Length: 217
Ligand code: SAH
Image (cartoon, rainbow, N blue to C red; front, side, top):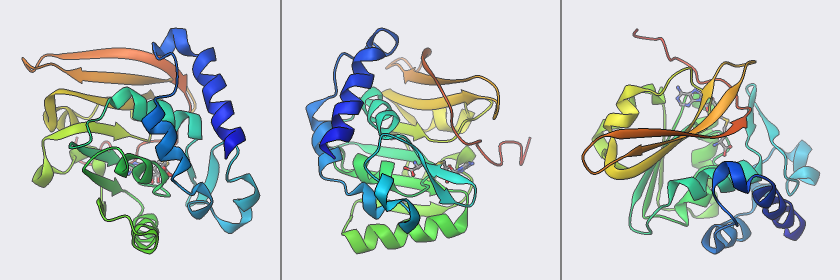
């Protein structure tokens, strides 16, 4: 764990010019320390649970690299009493980190089996402020909107309009945008208090593709 944190911190300093973030927020560091990543990876990868690497979780999906989890969390600038929407529950690790830094996490997973596994994991590990459902996150979760932050952990070809609509003014969304095997850029979308929207490119990244973008287009 300690070595993983050191690697995250050194990646932060390598990328500081691109991200505008100098060092790992101590609250995020604490959330990482308090989250057993070994409980979120398949048994076969237990030995790699505390490496700064993405790992396969089945169904062609991955648990993200811890540095990217930390950075995306940092970019959201969450308030302890806010709510967050995550698209792409996967293993549930990112949601578990978020749950320590805000009041309530809502997370949607496209692959029903993964959603079920994540729900069982949250229950077993005692996470009580994470609500997880299976479905297509392209449309967000209108029942609980607006959100104080939105995080998308699969690469979309464009920013889903519903996710911007469901973002509270004064809040941020972090989302990788690009093609599956092409260039992907992590973007920070800021919804200002006057509802205007700003988009900043942060960093080149590699995520699994966002599914079901064109279901109703
Ligand atoms: N945040 C995850 C990373 C999972 S990888 C973790 O911490 O482990 C991205 C996940 O996004 C995959 O599980 C994939 O099935 C899911 N996904 C892709 N498109 C989606 C969509 N339209 N709605 C919800 N989830 C989606």
